[in-house]
Length: 243
Image 1: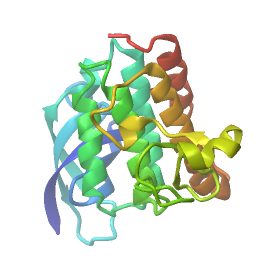
Image 2: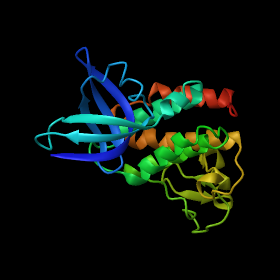
Image 3: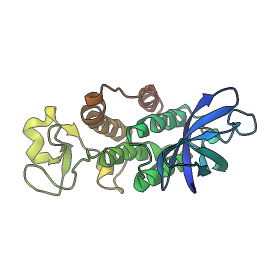
Image 4: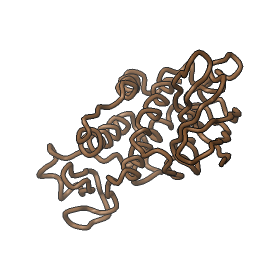
């Protein structure tokens, strides 16, 4: 059996001296592994860089087999990020956190957001917010989405500025005021794409998604955030507007 699809190269594991087991986030077939023969060669290595958009054809005798990939480069995002430590850390974060998804389970909306992040690296004032939204969407895909459309206490839909760490629901300024020190901040760009964006919003966004990823996804399985995410947050704090 075989299929062809577009995908984002995530990582590769050497197999022998020449071959590589490639992990690709594909549009229609989810996170999928395949053997690339000669994948460690100088000819193919530039194509197999994390973050690159590729066209893959997968072939195997049976669906449950590892199978083999043939790979064609479509967009070289990995190479474009080489001079930007923030972008490299973002790619590393995506490549690790996406492994929380089951193999071969398609998530087309998250795939589209991932590609949007990669294509936005030339806009350093924009893509960090997209990266926060990527983590927000990952929580949804994993079944732990946040409810940000109305206040958990009053049902109000205006002036939502907090998220309850218990219920993962939005809370209005008035309802949350007595408990403000226990609430998580809700950056407005997550509920209004036209809202002005400040570096503090990015930090608040990562704190919000990070809290629920750790509590609901990572900690129950004895997992920790990838080192790349820590580097990304540190770089964004030190160089929020790096080009």
